[in-house]
Image (cartoon, rainbow, N blue to C red; front, top):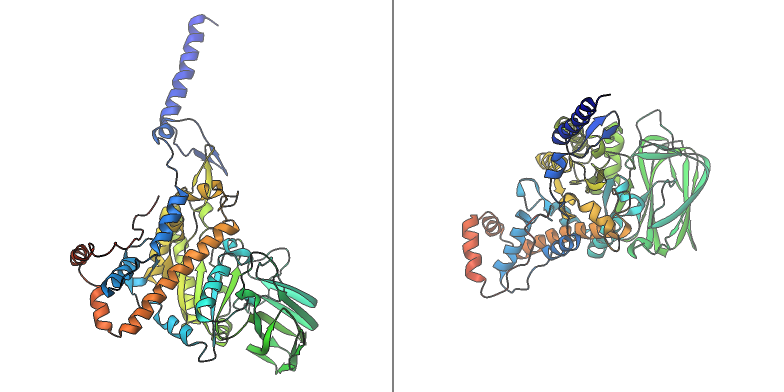
Amino acid sequence: MKTSRTLLFILAVFLLLGITWLLFPADGIAVGQKSLHFPSYAQDKQGPEEVVDVDAVRENVSKSFEMSVSDNLLDSLDFYRDYLTVNPNRIHLPNNDYTYFDSLFYLLEHAQADHKVYRVMHYGDSQIEMDRITSVLRQRLQEMFGGSGPGMICAVKRIFSISVNQSYSGNLVRYALVSDSTSRKASHSRYGVLTQFCQTTGQTTVTFSKSNNSQAYDKAKEISRVSVLLGNNSDGFRVSLKAEDYQGEIKSCPATSSATMLTWELPKSVERGTLTFQGNAEIYGIMLDGGYGVAVDNDALRGCSGTIFTRISKPLMKESFELTDTRLIILQFGGNRTPIIHNSSHISSYMRELDKQIKYFQEVAPQATLLFIGPADMGKSYNGKMGSYKCMNELNDSIKAMALSNNVAYWDMFHVMGGEGSMAQYVKHKPPLGSPDHIHFTFLGAQEMGGNLAKSIIIYHDFYQLRQRLSNDEMIKEFMNKDPEQIEQEKEARKNRIEPTNYYINETH
């Protein structure tokens, strides 16, 4: 080959590489299930990576829950108004209705006097497995309103829980909507409130015991009330409970396709107990509670995006929520759908599915307050660097809008943890707050998220109590709806008398 042609070939290659560098997209080009990447002008133009300062975010979140000490009522009202309307760490309320949780708080405050146990059902994906996040919320609510115990469990345990130990014997077969190798699909839709049930045949037993896990909270270890939620049972189906030196009466049920709940009130807290079933029945859940107050249930559905509930029998769900006095339902989903969302059309489709689930719960549990928790940040590698999935912001905003439009409260966990790029920094943090998969929290990170959720609920409850003491709804309503300019003028007039309320008002990205 002549020298001139060789030179021309080399120049053509450089020209092709230059054009590729100039035009190649920063995110690469999708080829099947893979992405093709090439150093590009668009990538260089992005500039240095912005890194979330996790400790600064955590400090701001912590401060956002703090109210400056003041004897002035207006200062206290200022704090609550600001928290409920502009604080990014708040629970977002439909139409900014500050009375949204009032009916729930009223019941929980009167639970002990009324000899009632009101339930909170926390549904979620693998982010809440092993009772993570839920366990912190349970401890805080039970400290405030009474009650104890680890809550409702399935008769056959699929995944380890930090809050209770259990085992079984006999012919107990688990059926679940969210399946794995240990479960089967039923020929009907009677899956119940845990989205799973166990078919018991003949004589079977379920044994529970207090958790000795170092991560377990104290309230979860106190069990003095045991209930069984069952249905579709044979005539004369019998259940008995033996717990240490306590021998409960044998309870029997006539044949029925409806849900039935059997309860034993123990004279004291026990560390271990065994339920014995005789006959045929579907066991929808076993409730391990203690004392009157609040019980908090954890139902972790690994791999679920929160779109399965409409496949469960409405009559059974309605009966079960009524029997168990479930008054708050928390839905925590979005993470499992994130990796397969590539555009706004995918998000819109997902919103339509979630919309159906919310309307379903509003139908089967009209007495319950609903709270949706959005997905945490999730990490994905881009050219060797960890960043958030491109859809995270739009997905989070869309779920929030969908929830609020359906009169459902929303907690924005994505921004509470720092927004885009935060999970990568949670993983790098010392000690780690995020797992190496850049999807899940570590136990420490999960405890922090659960604590932040609990603190936000407590602030709403504190404001509820203040309003009850004032007994002046019109004054509160006028104050909460005051013109923003007038609010700032009043704050300016008072700020020299007391340090201003220290709360977090700037979202971190």
